[in-house]
Image (cartoon, rainbow, N blue to C red; front, side, top):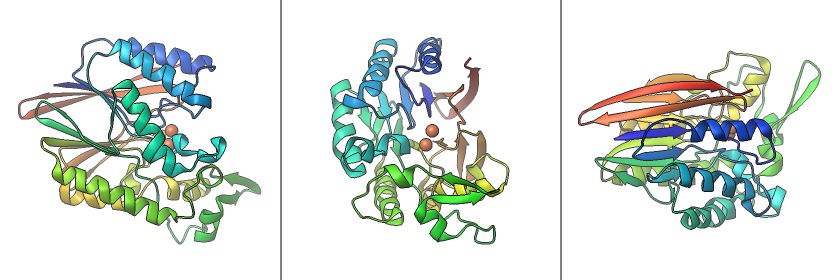
Length: 283
Ligand SMILES: [Fe+2]
Ligand SMILES: [Fe+2]
């Protein structure tokens, strides 16, 4: 079974770099038995136009089953006057149905002997390093001063969890992910948009990173992998490549960025799995 794993495409129909990137994706050679989109797949747009163009093109190019989770950029409900809950539980599941894509936040995708299991993940500040000058108040506000410049974490402005705290959002999503991984009928291969341990962040330490890394994921995801993880877990979100092992699970942050298409080809033949990482610079 050959699978293609893509993260952080951030597709935007009117952006030339984005268009070139989609051409490169469509040009990836070979046949696949599954394609997984790991979130921040396209930027939110009126009528989900960016997503529609992306999904249409992928559907035409790849005949295999396609599954997806969302990323934080796809949950910026305030831009369109909808809550992030409606996006994650109503709007995107509907879009998935329309295109025949499996929405991994609701159900697993089973292909041959493998079950693809996934979640957006979210963040809960469990990565905050308390001795690095960033406070929980900074994180809840979403702003931080570095060298007299104010940096802002846009999720805090644009997401709307209808009054629920980030920690509670994370518990809800990760608990369901945990159930799906335990109930998987095949050998699980799992995905989270945000990262399961701080070791998967991929960026060197810096004052701005001490702020941003706290939004990069949650140890709750890592705890699920520790107890119930399969052979591989893939994440993205930080746009920096990293890898680690959690329990018996090999974890890879695919590390795709706006100008850099990074992707993974997973080849599972009986008991052996081969993983190939490739990258294409977009200019
Ligand atoms: Fe991203
Ligand atoms: Fe992201």
